[in-house]
Image 1 (cartoon, rainbow, N blue to C red):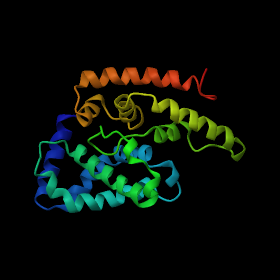
Image 2 (cartoon, helix red, strand yellow; image 1 turned 180 degrees about the horizontal axis):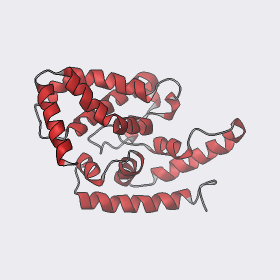
Image 3 (cartoon, rainbow, N blue to C red; image 1 turned 90 degrees about the horizontal axis):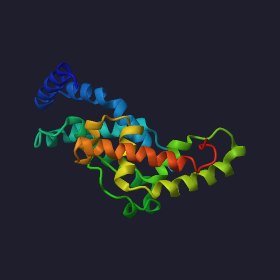
Image 4 (tube, rainbow, N blue to C red; image 1 turned 135 degrees about the horizontal axis):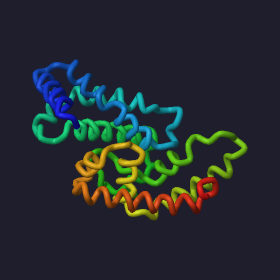
Amino acid sequence: MAVEAEQEIAELLTRVRAGDQQALAELFARHRNKLRRMVQLRLDHRLAGRVSPSDVLQEAYIDALKRVDHYFEKPDQPFFGWLRLIVGQRLADVHREHLAQKRDVGQEVSINRGGPTTDSACLAACLLGAGSSPSHAAARTESFVRLEEALNSMDALDREVLALRHFEELSNTETAALLGVQPAAASKRYVRALARLKQILETIPGFGG
């Protein structure tokens, strides 16, 4: 991050600490695109048409307004990481509210301190897209199942690095900070995860060369 941007964020945080809600709105807006990508990836595909990423972000912003004092209890943490945690908690609440027992949280390895981890179904849905024709529904369902199973065979941390770097488009430094690993380790895992993803896609009809 450029020095000027860091200074601007520091100034906004000073205003937030003084109770300036507009400053918090500006900070949230700075990170909105990243947060939206996070929600788009991790929002359960079964909620399509019922809950939008904008809905989640709007509720998360209200949560941040109510809880921003908690950030200043540990102000050394990156503000983006704290915001991401707030959004992740709101997303988890949405899943509990709308899916109840349908979502097996016991199968989700809690390795991402910035929110819920990426399960294989979310990645599969993102890779397959929305689908273009009802006539392809059966084939798409078969591909989804095969892709989900293959992704589930990946190491959970590698899958999470892939989600953060490739789908959320975070930097290697941001990814390493969120996962609590060294940047070099995060970079190596990303390269490995991309290679594994390529192998997986080559086995799925419509993806392979």
